[in-house]
Image 1 (cartoon, rainbow, N blue to C red):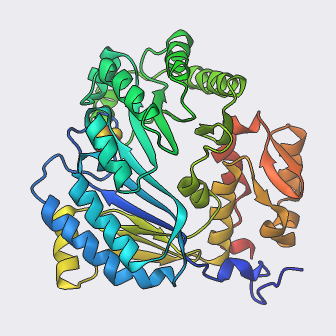
Image 2 (image 1 turned 180 degrees about the vertical axis):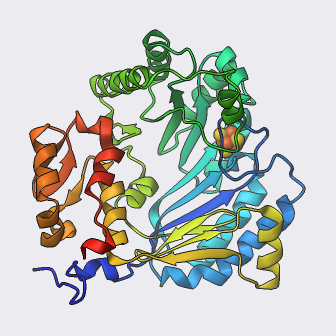
Amino acid sequence: MALRCGTCGLPTLHQIPQPLAGLYFHIPFCHRACTYCDFHFSTSLRTKGPVLAAMRKELEARVGELEGASLGSVYFGGGTPGMLSPGELGGLLADVRRLAPVQPDAEITLEANPEDVSAASLDAWQRLGINRVSLGIQSFRDDRLRWMNRSHDAARSHRSIGLVSAAGLRTWTIDLIYGLPGMGLAEWEEQLAIALGHGMPHLSAYCLTVETRTALHHQVAAGRVHLPADGEQAAQFGHLIARMEASGLVQYEISNFGKEGHFAVHNTNYWRGVPYLGIGPAAHSFNGVRRRWNVANNVRYADAVEKGACHWEEETLTPVQQLNERLFTGLRTMWGVGLAELGDRFLQDNAKAIGRYLALDELQVRDGRLMLTPKGRHFADRIASDLFATDDDR
Ligand code: SF4
């Protein structure tokens, strides 16, 4: 029986920081600003030297937060980490191996764009121990890529996939975007068919969203761009699920599909609530209880790290917030959330709402876990937030 907190009644497991198991590096540089992107990045490389030096210093200062745990994954995200030279990537990885135990079979992922992929770069990345490459393809159509302001064209997409798939990596993946202005099912099917034709073992597919402070936001606000109606985007999502399942790629997270043995270790750990340490401007860290996010500004980040000053904000999640976090990320995965993790009190408080979703065939209980049904995957975020506990309830 799970021990429970005397104050809130939730399983105490949620209050015990677990050892960190994943390491994330945020590389905040890109060739260009994509129309839709609100991640933290700079298209100027002016701060690259100081930022990378600061990242190595931050890792050294914070490696104790790993509490000696072996790393099961290292992830270079961004931004565009594939822009870094092998020497720069190797410097970071050498520090990781010097400072922390890395499991022999650790997944080491590099996000790269097609323009950064060549036989030479792939060879160099593999020599560094990188065993998974995530390619930002987004579309196989030149008109779409131009509209997105991507740096590559369709020919480059195909060439880079050919090189990556033949490189002998442990695995690889591509990103695609659907729900584009004017996109219909026929175009989306064409994109998926091309991707499947390349034999990809894993796909991350995202519906285009309009984030503030992006060029897309201005275009939509000015009425120059119109997104497809919700129904069309939902139809494209439904087609994606059916097409991937028919092709042997399991939807193990709402936006992620993989063949058995090719699920992303780093991301899966994140969705399952395993703690991680994030290094670099705008990087987030989570130890099961406390969330920290670094300043999203390259100059301020590098200066603060150099001076040993604070370069982050953080919050400590209440037990209820921890539970909601677990629910939100867990429900998005095929594993759902264990009923024991949710606890009797949550299940009692939400009995009516859970019963309603069970009756609607949007939630199901299997093997002691609460999870979405195929129908419920269309409404993951709404269902999770509907079930959220509040501190007032406790
Ligand atoms: S390359 Fe990636 S991180 Fe950079 S602007 Fe484009 S979408 Fe954003």
